[in-house]
Image 1 (spheres, rainbow, N blue to C red):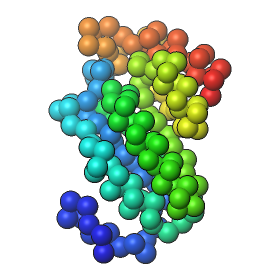
Image 2 (tube, one colour):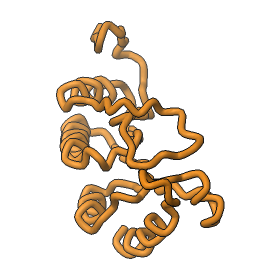
Image 3 (tube, rainbow, N blue to C red):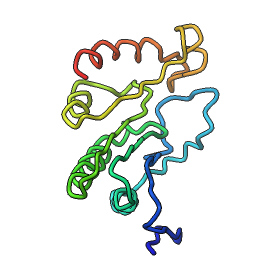
Image 4 (cartoon, rainbow, N blue to C red):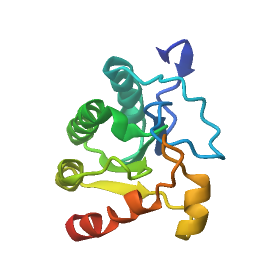
Amino acid sequence: MKKVKNIPFSANKEIYILRFSLTTECNLNCIYCYVRKDSRHFSLDLARKILDIFLDSPGEEKLLMIYGGEPLLYFNLLKKIIIFSRDTAEKKRKRLIISIGTNGTLLDDEKINFFKKENVKISLTLDGRKQFHDQARLCQNKKGSFEEVFVKIPPILKKI
């Protein structure tokens, strides 16, 4: 029996999906957000322990969904987690799909290129038309984020 923070785990149970909230921190102030933005985030050591349990569980196919807050605020940590996950899955002969949920405001060529190289799926959040999105998904300056996100879609579609 393995334990992570006093949570028992039986290795005979298959874990197909791991939803991994990398951080509670976010660069937007969405009016409906339920996440307490207290700037917590996983350490690499704890993430590795959790991912080891996930990838040790029975089953050949695994889905790792990483979200937040906004996970791109910790891009260097995110890269290490993705690389560790890929390497570990390969060693354990597991097929791993990795998906990142992001508000898109921090996406740039470096990040998009990394996600392409590592075959990471990107889930970009938009709340419908500009008018509705900008009412709900506010930047720190209280302005809507639609345009900031919408311009990221063509580079993502072109590269990934």
